[in-house]
Image 1: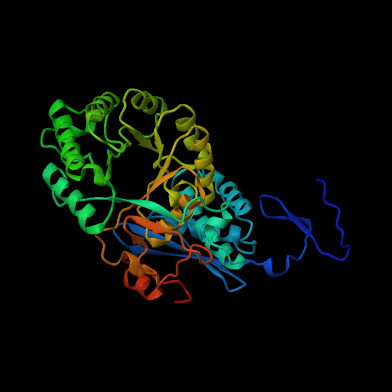
Image 2 (image 1 turned 180 degrees about the vertical axis):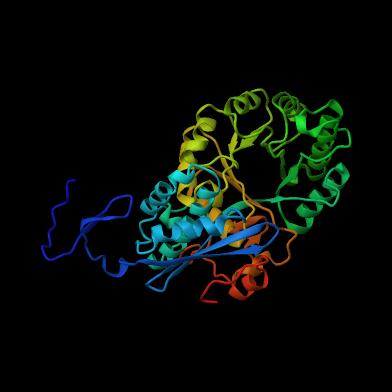
Length: 410
């Protein structure tokens, strides 16, 4: 290894490889010579189980992050903690690769391992922003926009009733101020013979088309509306459904086929004029690459606390931008993960929108001390250091999942 010539012969240097082991020669980085002292998690019982992550440092700065979602994540994060304790949190890229490598034997190319690493990575952006006194978007290269458009994932008591969906769409637009919505299409129609085979009969397709027709006509040009299939349909059924919906103003049709076979996804996307969004269930840039390069989607939809974190999403956005593909971030997070996604959306040119899934949960915003996070369908990007949010630890304690205990400092 070639070492850089040092102008100050009295300085102490170390070089660290990706595994974090000292290889010789360390320089005292002054006020930025900070070490991680601990990583802790709690699960909050929201409309999803939100795994909040805290990174502690010997400088007194604490970073907040979030991992997607729930079960087994605290145990994986506990397994990761020894790999980052004693390390400098400013080395975000190196620590990310370090964690991926350390967990490689346990499958760290996808799944819960990557979600756990994502939670720590989000918290690193928060704590580094606080150490350097800059907002997190600055760590990603600066911002393109001051606020990110938010689309509201809508629900009704009767998900399968087209008129109920239309009424809820109208309410969310008129009363809550959103101009971007999403509804589910993988809902029972009453015409199913065997849902396990993923095949859609014509009456089922017509029922889904009726939902789309009622909703899009009700909101008109006041809102864009997307529709989610949750990987529920066969290739042929997905093609027939997508072509049937070409008559309506569909913002996008999301995940119409299972996520494993990219060849099928490409065929479905290229068979229709209905825009297709994909990416929520694919991990890291490596997982998204073929979908983008083979034009198997019209919109890429990664989930920041799941796909690999903020910098990994930035990489995905850069690759997508080479193919002129916009990015709409999937999101079911608490305010912490949502704001981390908003910072990413601020820092990339091709951000389209950010999902919000908790509009019916009255205390979502109570988890942080800041107010009015979403106004008129947009989330403003804070200029405060890090993610710009302050966890309300009392509110977190009030909403802990069963069996959870609070962070040690609380």
